[in-house]
Image 1 (tube, rainbow, N blue to C red):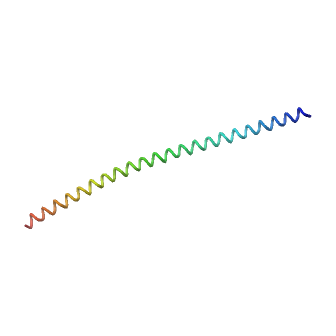
Image 2 (cartoon, one colour; image 1 turned 60 degrees about the vertical axis):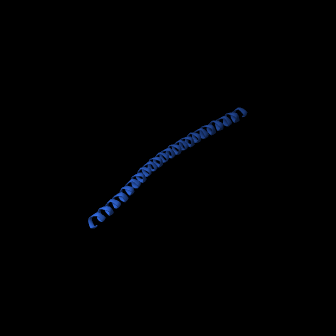
Image 3 (cartoon, helix red, strand yellow; image 1 turned 30 degrees about the vertical axis):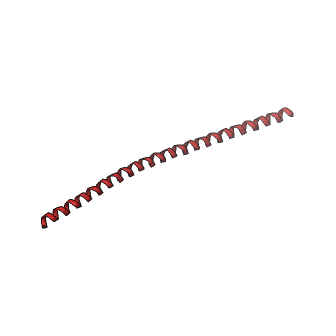
Length: 82
């Protein structure tokens, strides 16, 4: 009887080890997926930041150009009417 109990205990531990190994594998896989998703989000954020910086620089340039055009138009109108 003792040998049979030992075999049952060993089988129980084998089953438990298999379950825990499977759970660990699944958890590890989920963490890797989460990390990969995080990297994708960070890359997208960096891309959007670069696009924002480029658009902001273009906006500043166009704003300056508009001010120069307004000034030139003002001078032109003064010369034409003056």
